[in-house]
Amino acid sequence: MPCGRWVAVFLAILSLGMTGAFSQSTLVFPQLVEGPGASSFLVVMNAGWVEDTGQIEFFDSAGRPWGLIVGDTQRSVISYNIAPGGFTVVETSGGDSLSSGYVLVRSETEESRLAGTLRVLLGDQEVVFLDAPARREYLIFIEQSDSVRTGLAIVNLASEESTIRLEVLNDLGEVLAQQTLSMDAGHQLARFADQLLVDLPRSFQGVLRASSGQVFSLLGVLQDSTGALRSLAAPRLEEVRLPMPGPELFSGELALQHVADQLAHGARPTGSSEILKAGDEIQSKLRSLGWTVEQDLHTLDLGSIQIPVRNLVARSGEGPTVILGAHYDTRIWADRDPDPALREQRVPGANDGGSGTAVLLELARVISDHYVVNREIRLVFFDAEDNGNIEPWSLRPESLVGGWIIGSSLYAANLDLESEDIQFMILVDMVGDMNQRFPQEAASRASAADLVEEIWDIAASLGFEDVFLVQPGSAIVDDHRPFIDRGIPAVDLIDLDYPFWHTTQDTLDKVSAESLERVGRVLQSLLVQKEIIERKK
Ligand SMILES: [Zn+2]
Image (cartoon, rainbow, N blue to C red; front, top):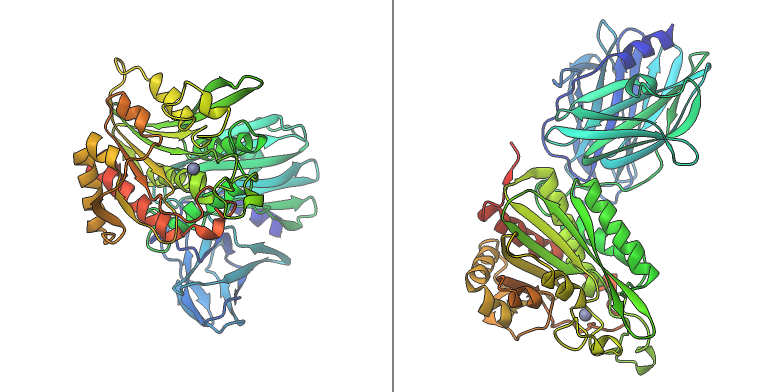
């Protein structure tokens, strides 16, 4: 009976190997069943404007290329070539015994836009799977009763061992059962949900949430008492689009997405409900990447009102500490807007507030996915940087000057330098504009000449000498200053030459993925060069 064979497939723990890097145009089908009476029908469609070429690859349960019968020859790799708007079909039939594997469709085409479906035929059963892309989180509605049971197939798409957390929640969001899976690189697990989560009630409906710091692919299948199978669609959440050159490198595209995510909350001035939501999102992103996150909370007395100031502090590793910082608040008034009528509107803060935050978030992903941290890296997201020269902010004593940099001043003032060894601090602020230029900010040169030289040398070695200018810039009041005042060498990467600074035009379209990527790669290379991080084996 077909369902009996399906059960057998899900009972097996399948070890699948992976080779090569994922690109943004890899389709993943995490479950393929082949054998007597079992076959597959794969359709790959090209929704792009150019011909798409690449390879369809089958992997067996041992991670080896899996030779399936295609036409009348046995093949594990099939090159394809699909016209724009066209499609290709691959029909396979497997070997002598029932066995399980998975399919990757890897495009070699830039700007590829592929979609695909996989029909698995099992006796008189047929089930259609969509591809299950690389993500860090999946939600699937699952159920179990006397008449239905849910199966899951999970593939670890990371290039190293990773931990995937499974939780089943009821309609109130309460945890019914949980489990943590440790999976080797490229390995696949295919089981029924009640075998993975032994505490599950005999009968329930719930949401399975799977999450990890690394990327994985997950598929659900519902089987009813008649043996009928149904694919369980995972709703769209964050899809992780990995950069083409290799996922170990900082991606400007992924960083730009973080800017967009910040902007989706609206303008984010200190004390607003928008900055609360944006800050919560920063924290949850960092936690899902495995960083330890704390809030550094203060209350600012502005006379008539009390304003909460919330710095966010993420840590990875132990030992002497390196701080990377950015402010995530946005200026409350667009008082440099060319149109006087708009000067009491808020600054959207794509570049001023969004760009530095985005660079730190994408760097956090690169570090946790691909590196071991040899010392402590601390990412600090400062609040209350940007309301300088506006009353009543400008009257506060917490700030060095005129109401700027209040969050970083409070944070730096409270550092216990007896117990903490803080080696240096680097600030990224307004780093994403199209016409990017970084002269060497004057206070940075005075406080950390060697570090400035090292950063600008790395930039030159990466081919960015036209952007990182070896020439002195003016001294800027920014979040690095309170650290310098405590004797900590600190460098400010800032491009103040930005026509939309403190205007209503500081919007997403003014920020460049390439600019974010240059800054991120320089920081990534610096951390490697100083042996603060090293590649995972
Ligand atoms: Zn600003």
